[in-house]
Amino acid sequence: MLDELGVEAADLVTHDIGNMVGYAFAAQHPRQVTRWVAMDAPLPGIGLWDEIPGAMHSAFEQFAAFSQDALDNKAFAAKGKLAMPVLAIGPEKSFGTAQAEVMRLVASDVTAHVVANSGH
Image (tube, rainbow, N blue to C red; front, top):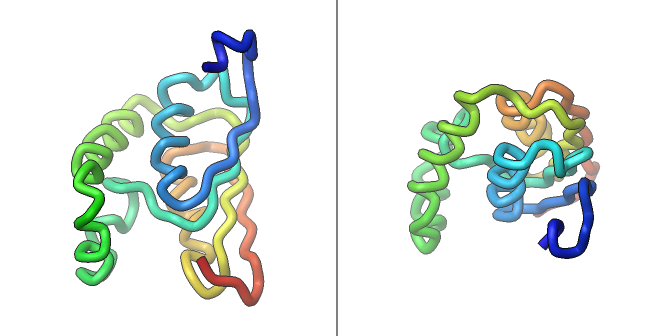
């Protein structure tokens, strides 16, 4: 779509499942992403993904594509970290500082921010 609109690069803002789509886009098209804001959700296959409580797994069962996302994300990560600035925002009562911890595994320039008194 960016190509069709003649947009060479853009800022990317994602939330929840959008983080997974955003990471896939940024990893495959890093020249088109000037900076990235990622909010309140882990990346399947990255960081503590396998250690998150079984309840989360059960809740996510409806998202059958996550298994493939995890494989894709690991392959993207193996190619190196994203270079664009990433702002990782986590709600205090939800993903909090873990948002930045996960993003630091896939990006080299991460700024963390926790929104006080907030949830998902």
